[in-house]
Amino acid sequence: MSKITESARGEDCQIRYTGVCSHDPAKTIWSHCRHGAAGRGKGFKAVDVAGAYGCTDCDAVYDGQRKPPSGVTREQLDADWAMGHFRSLVILKDKGLVK
Image 1 (cartoon, rainbow, N blue to C red):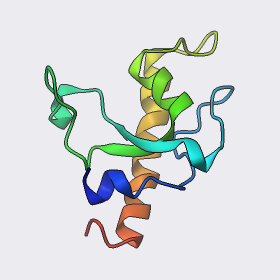
Image 2 (cartoon, one colour; image 1 turned 135 degrees about the horizontal axis):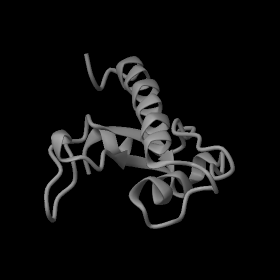
Image 3 (cartoon, helix red, strand yellow; image 1 turned 90 degrees about the vertical axis):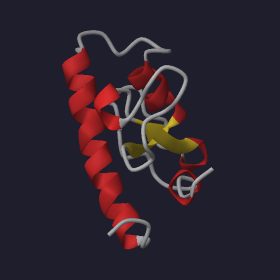
């Protein structure tokens, strides 16, 4: 695990999908971006900086392991994840893990 992925322990979920998020810091992980442009490929995750603090419930919806709430589009999920990514970058900067 990298310092970034390890830093997720005890953090608040920054993805915050309405009707999905557990709001439980004990369930927060580092949610990696699902897009190839972030360095993701078959059999490996995106680069660590392309991620967000997310609870396991939000991450499961983002990754497609769990259905999103009724009426929520993939575009909305991606936009909410991106906002969580930006909030997470600010936290990483405050922790001294990125410049």
